Length: 140
Image (tube, rainbow, N blue to C red; front, top):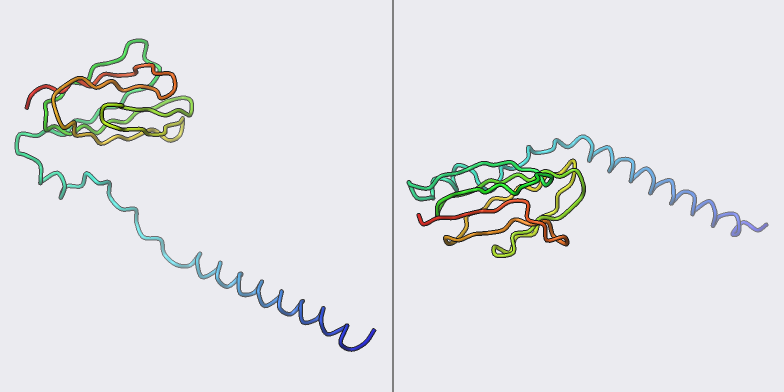
């Protein structure tokens, strides 16, 4: 074995050791950097103050297993914070509003809605088309 044949594997090992040390230092640095607190949802108080004085903010929670779909009533201009829970991984949709959201047993869907006009909106399970709730928006 010549000197050159021996030098190439040693150089490759040294390069590998340097890369592993570099990765270890970068992982340690990433672990020590403080994580900023999560940002607030888009419906913060700053956004809510821009709404009309007569607007309401309604919060509702519903499940996908109810035998009869509940009816949620609100006036045009109101805001709805809707949380939908499910025991299985699914998608929920409101076709007239163009909403499609994933949900699962550990990850409920949270919808923030401000329907643009009065009317009836079906909240469905995507794929099956089963209505899990109805949203009735009256005049403001």
